[in-house]
Every structure is written in C-alpha cells, then in structure tokens.
Amino acid sequence: MTSHRCLRQELSQQHLTLFTALGITGTWKCPPQKKRHLEVKPMHKKAGSSTPYVALRLVAFRPSLVPGHMVHPVFELSIYNHSRRMYCGCKASYNFGFKNIFSKEHCLIPLQELLKSSAFLVDDSCVFGVEILKIDVSSPEKKAVVVQKKPTTVQNLFVQKKGFVKGTYTWNMNNFLELDLDHFVRSPTFEVGGHKWYIRMYPRGNKYSTDCLSLYLYLDVSDELHLKSKKVVVMTLSILDQKNGKHLTGTSGLLVFTGGRSWGWANFLGLKKLKDPSEGYVVGSSCVVKADLTIVGSSNDC
Image 1 (tube, rainbow, N blue to C red):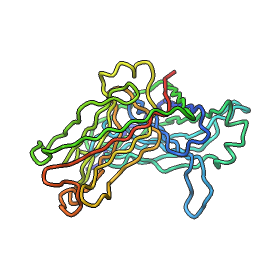
Image 2 (image 1 turned 180 degrees about the horizontal axis):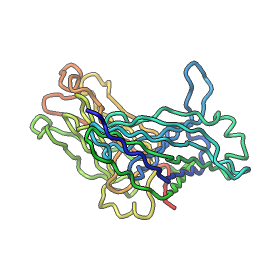
Image 3 (image 1 turned 30 degrees about the horizontal axis):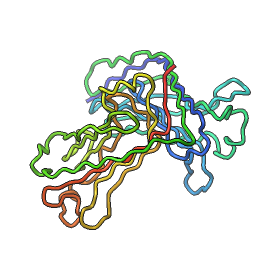
Image 4 (image 1 turned 90 degrees about the horizontal axis):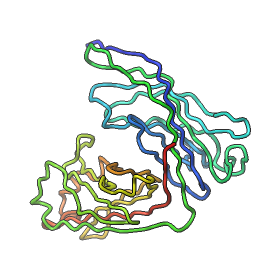
C-alpha cells in the first residue's frame, strides 16, 4: 500500500539550560515537550576514540507515536555561544517509529574544550537547543497527517554540586504469582525529599516491550510540590536476585520529573530470565524491587 505523506514547516524550538554543570558526567533528559525531548550526553565517545564529547540527540515521546506511522523530522541540534550571541551546531534528520525513538548522537564540542571555554560556559551554565525545521509523516492510510505548530519552550535545569537528597525504597511482593500479571501493578507510595513517588511494574511487559518485564518510577500526580519546580533526579531501579545476590539494575542519567510523569525501562528484564528459578528473581511467590533516588537539582520552564 502506498503511504501518504504530509509535509509541513514547524516553527518549534526547545532550549535546555544547565546550571552548575561542572562535575556532572551522566546524561541529561528534559521532559517531553508534547512529542519529543532533548537528551544531552556530556561524556559521549566516538567509535575508536577515547576523547569525550558533549553530544546531543533527539528522542521521540513514544505515547505520541502510532504503530505503522513513521515520523521524519529535520532538525538542528546546537549549543549557545554567548560571545557571538548565536547557536552553533549541526543539522540532522532521523526516521522515528513506534519502537525506534532515539536519533543518533551528534557530537558538538569536546568536553574539555567546553569546560575551558568562556564562550559556551558562562557562570557555570551552558545552553543547548533543538529546532524542528520540518516534519514529514508517513501513514499507511491514505489520509493527511496534520503536524501542529509549536511555540518555543525553554527548560532551565539547576544542578547542585552538593547537598543531594537521597532515599531508598524496597518493595516486597510476597504474592507476585497471584497478581494480575496481564496488567500493571503499583507499589505503595513512598517519600523522598518531601515528594511522593511510586514504582509501576508490568510483569509481562507493556505495549512498548518485547518479551520483557517493564519497570518505571513515577512522581505522584497528587504531589503538590512539583507545581513549584520539577525535580532533577538520578535513579536506580533493581530487581533483587534472592538466591545469588546478582541483582539486575538499571541506572539513569539526570532525569526531570513532574507530577504524573515517569521514567524507566520498557525492556527491563527478559520474561525467560524472570521465570527461571535459578536466576532468583522470583522465589516461591516473592519478588523484590528496589528504588534508589538522588535528587540533584530542580527545573522550571520559561
């Protein structure tokens, strides 16, 4: 079947400002702006090279994608040069699909050059941006796909160098095999840093996974403190190996949480391993999940 394509200019920009960025070596992700978010990797290395680069990539917001549709944006990834008062970067394009949401990483500047620069790093902060130039949407149906224009958005991230707030929560499920495994299960709400959090697990995976258990951390939508500022968090989610002590863990870079928003992994643990008694992830009817959170800063929109 011939696909129908609708091409339309989109004047959409997103800017990410990182304050007190020195010493942070993880990955920064700002929350999705409707259909995409910008990811910053300050320690990315090219194939065959040991030199760390500051790299950017565009990530599609998976719930906004429709199975069978392909989204082909042309965009510019950039870093702001305060001396020249202009953005410097590169033009790129990518084909996004329902299970293909990450563009390639594009290296902008060597990390050491950035840290020594007075043009890109001012008052211990730097600014990154992405501008969507146009979007081409492929649909298997013969109908137009409308791409709405979006305003410019600015995301400020304030990252502390010390005084981090840390917390750990262990979720003991003693009736794991008795749960409705075809749907998600939710942990009791717990508090870290005065905020309410919970874990959501899809024992047989969600619609984005492939034969894997899915695991996510949520900032509770009832948490009123998130209205003042979003939280910048580093998280580790683990399923404990109760026999061998070889726990399965996933650790994030820097993530921005707002009420009702989640971050996690669709393909956290293969179902074959989960069901294997020798792996120790389910013993009898017991499954233990652990969350380690470190709140390292805050964020707001301008």
